[in-house]
Image 1 (cartoon, rainbow, N blue to C red):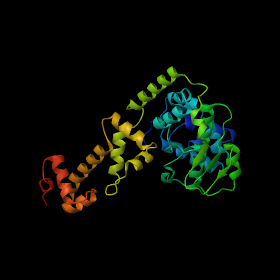
Image 2: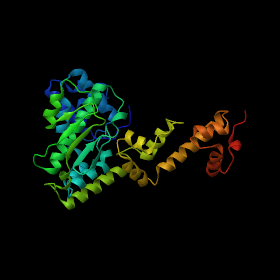
Image 3: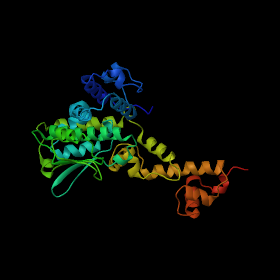
Image 4: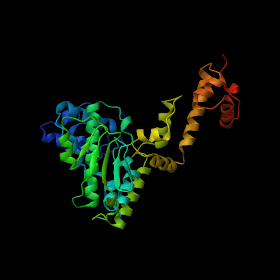
Length: 336
């Protein structure tokens, strides 16, 4: 089971919705290592893997297509603590949605989220959806829930009856497609390149009805504090290091790592900066560790090691190795 960092609000809502369908909590939580009482305890810490396990349990119990939408709509911004209230109290919707990206790592991020604008539209999207390596039915569940969350959060930030212009899914068109339109209140299109929820651009300039500069500042400070607590979130530099060590010879880019961690590359850079690290620093550390390991435990040539570590040539590798150790690679080679 992966490390646990997140309060159980998503699991609690999932169990609540399934209770309405006659599904007992132990069935929802099967295989998660959690007991029914724990998901209603704010002190409990859970993982993304546990949430995905619970969603898979839900799909085995019921194929009711409305479930992910009902779950998403119950995940009100108030459920997210300081993160949610920072969004509700921002000066404009644009500020709110920018903060949503900045602090998304506080929100049990199953998927990375992003938004962009063009001349006419404001669009929520899920840039890492192709890397969500789960079964098709679970992927549909997660994407439907994600867009349902965007739908309800935009309503709560902007106020009133704002609805999307359209929704697009990078999924085959299901037989239950009308349920998608019913819950998102807009035309829905399938077999698209990526999953998006589209609004008029004017939404970004709306002043939220709960706007309060003092409260917004306080909530942002609370979010920053949470990001800085080592027991609240993973050591990001360590997570990046481990991910790169897991893929020697085919190192992930910063975009790959950010997607896997459920954040944008800008957020990842900021989180690393808070630990006085950069992505390049960590990449350099990984190369150093692997270079020493290859020299000590294999008979691979310097040229082969340079290629494995992604250097353009052996000369560049030797230069970096001297910078790391003050020695030539041959000086660190174990005797046969």
